[in-house]
Image (tube, rainbow, N blue to C red; front, side, top):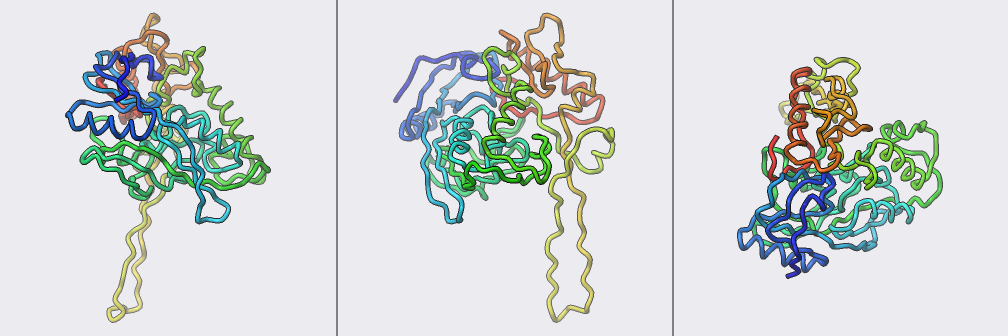
Length: 379
């Protein structure tokens, strides 16, 4: 078993918090990963599976258990049953942005707007990563995984993963447990072969973010370059020289609220309707049909509202700190990112997060939910 000397999690997570665990295993191959997980699960040890560490908020105390680092890498090109498409089977430990770079270089479309997102490929389906109108659910075919319950390996189609807005059956939502306790071993995506020619871009959200009109044509490489530049301006591309990137990305999720609640918010609060829910199909037996078909009722769609807008309009601006000397603060570029300005403890960051939640709740009547997985820390 490839045990290694435990490294403090503050050195392995982008929010830079957490002590050294009791035990650490580095898994460079699928066999090593499967073997490590089966062993620690059989022993009943607490286990933390660690990829890029970009979606974790770890407490100050040492993790009392085993950290298994997923370091598997590799991309396998597979045929697709759809003309003009190709499938990529990618190992879970492969860097997500490295995969996007590979796809763009190969002229494959479908994930280019998700350039610059930190973390690993295996973590991407867990919270259905997305940006600028693209989400992994749009290209995901299946995952290979190992279940904690029985240690068995299986291939599961995307339709069975409960993929929704920043969620899946694997996601540890704050205050709850995942619907399925398993670890992803590999991910298979289906991407469109578009080459490097310029083309018009489907998706209003992506066009708006890039300043494109409906008839403007650009290449996948152009999209990647501009998304990276946009994210860098917000401090959302990892940069060791920039404390604004010492974060877990967007710390709070954009809130999903009812249409009725959304109407109580100021009209200028940015919002986006979610897919409306239609009534189930009404089946009328032929012998009972009297010529009248009851009208189907279109229910109001839930609404996604901007957490960043709510934070700033609750009086908490970019760069905010609770005290001048605090080592935890909001990014100076992005009101959704809690940042470690250098040596901040998890307790300091949690205090800031609770303060933001309280101000937004007091001003607007809703509690923002954290997006990272919290380990050994409470809000």
